Image (tube, rainbow, N blue to C red; front, side, top):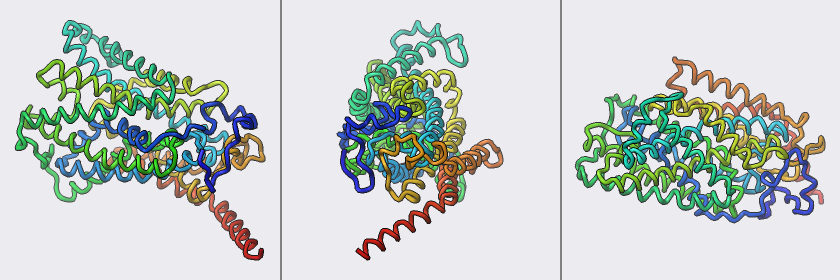
Length: 498
């Protein structure tokens, strides 16, 4: 692990026994394998971006009444905000080699960190189920394409899914669990392949669209409804905010992956190529495909599965849909399997392992019936608002504590110290100040999301939550800031006298 002037050196393997068993296991302890290069970080973001969920969210912006070029601009602006935030979130985990849930102990206390960990884990329930359902739809189309007789299994439904739907959902659920079960090295190899593979399919689909319609059929002024100038500006700002909300989950627990990076330089380079550059190319392809469907089929199709199914060649359809399935498995594992695996393991390290934590999220995702959360563009935006209201405050408190309160300093050994002598013991292992900032920030965000008259503001729930969480925490912890400033002045004076 690289040495840092801002972090204490983790205990050597022989002294790791000094870490409290109530706070540590093999998965949560500081990693010794910081060998991820910028390409591995780049592939992580490719897996996040290149998914059916990402495509559906981007395509849904057309329902806001925006033209193609405006959608493209919003996507790029939103992803640049995500890049900046990702660099900030990555630093504490890369310095220490520990996951997001453990880093949270610095702000919330060694036991209080279970609060943000459980919140993030529960959010992963929803996203894991949504992405699994989207992938199962593609699998169902492939199945019906080659075995039309299976259509008989689509006539009845249980809890909103047909018999064939349940079979495909269960198949995707098991495939993802198999990849996850082999650990982080297997996940690393999988995402290195999954993201690039989608470029081939999406590029081919865009090429087919252009071939069928000609360049004249691709309209970059396409919009589903007419808006005034001020309305267009507002909807563009809204779309930008929704981009950040969509990525807020993997953004919050990005430390689960940056902990494996060789250096912050590698992280920043991977973020630069994996977010603005990569997302711009993906956004262009998305805009071309969605715009082309209007000319080719007489209506805008915002579902890539439906678009791919309309390609004449059965083999091309199968390959395209299977590749999309692979990509969606990639994002689901990195964003919604790994995070709850660490988060739930953090709650009881000796009883819940990395694998057990991930499987808890997988089972919980089925109980939520996620297909009911992502059925329409309006429902997609509503889901993003609620999730953003919960994630934003956690993000704001984490960064305010690390950068504004602790001044980028963190003691690794104290993250695993459950005695009153530990720096992050606070009051019984909980930091009341962080909790006092979290509760009102989340409450305000949820109140906005569930109040019809504030629907326009709800799209900014992540930003509101992050600002409230950081602002309230910075205010209630102002005495700690003053104390640190005094200590810093005292040390400076002592050095001058020497």
